[in-house]
Image 1 (cartoon, one colour):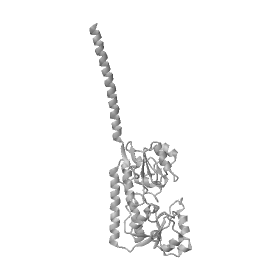
Image 2: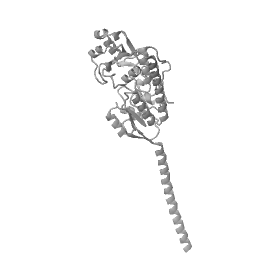
Image 3: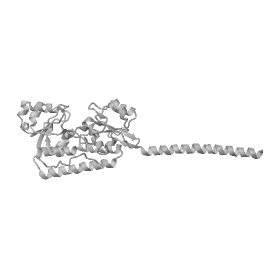
Image 4: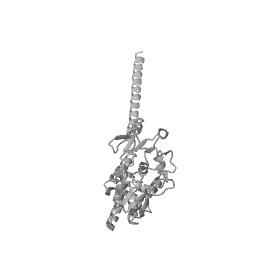
Length: 333
């Protein structure tokens, strides 16, 4: 009888030990699983010093404008974009038209709707300083990781933005390759212009964005990097300030840059140009006889491909200095 009781005690203690071991092993498995998840996540510092946790290498990425889509496709494959902007598919404005031709949904000019957002459920949103604060707040409140770049007004800022985007998507090395290619092409520009030592030309941008193009804009940086004087700057007007007709006449540029014709003129750029050139005061200027059309992808360049805008502007002002036949989207892969 005593032996039986002793056996029962041993059995009971053994059972308790087994139960304890079971729960302990379960806790350890959960801990190991948690460690694996935490190892997959990483933290990125964006352009505004926000510390953003990315749960895993994103596969459904959403940009908030065409320039961001272009920078994204410099470091990730098209399959990792969750959507694209309609403007991305316009070859007159875009370097990625062919790459995004099959990507849906398409985001209209008026921006990302709640319907599109919930449909694609991105695992990363890359936004810019031009994105409305209420949208940023809403996306963050819904749990989407939001990494911000500063809308570039200089080549250096574009390079910084590319590095931020590359870090956010887990492709840092690809970002460095993109920046290296930009720097290579810019050195080519600088050395070519220095060797030619050409007398500087002065150009004036004709744009519907009547306050755009002065010092402080990306256009100004690209134009001056091409060795061209900016007529807007020559009369003391900065980006964001209105250039009056009197100041246009006073600037007396060598030529006008205008938007090249496109199949569809949804923005009315062609009508604006024609109206500008029909003005008798403009027709009395020497630049009226040298109107140079430029693709919008050069005039409003703000991605890694801005280096092509520098070359295109220099060619327009000074003749064929640079071979543009190999012009294509700059990628790090």
